[in-house]
Image (cartoon, rainbow, N blue to C red; front, top):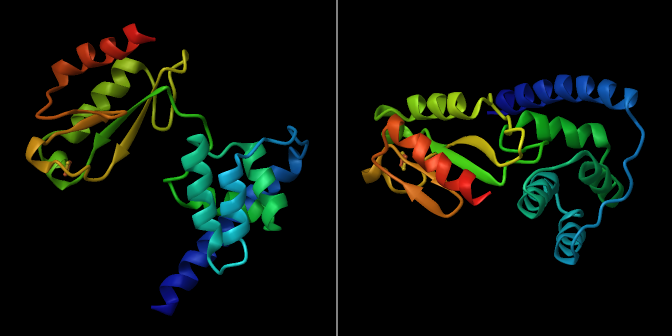
Length: 186
Ligand code: FES
């Protein structure tokens, strides 16, 4: 088992070195970002515990929807963890986002049941309709698309969710109307 962890740490080391070099080229601060009180309390509680960084990053993303550069800088100041290490972890785990998601996040399920029933086709069609690639956001800031794993209603496969709305047994030709509904809401 140990060699697996060593391999992961080795990969992260390469990633952190690359990110660190990029950071040093662009070191100007973008000012101090306000963190809500509950986030500050969470960081204070967790920063002294082993393996705290992942927990803190999850909480930060839950708070802001993504982890911006100013947020990462502030986390570094509050925890004493080097910024390059924070970015090493953020870039290693695809779950973490460094750009602001769209107002409406289309989460396309690629769990087994949905994948087998055309989830991948749905994601490609949604990207084509919105004109965005992986990790992208539409120019008006309204939409982004995230592949997700099982959202817990496999009987409705294939499934997408938009915020708290769930659409099941979906076909590609239903996507334009669903997207138009949110676009019209602005
Ligand atoms: S696999 Fe998509 S909801 Fe379970």
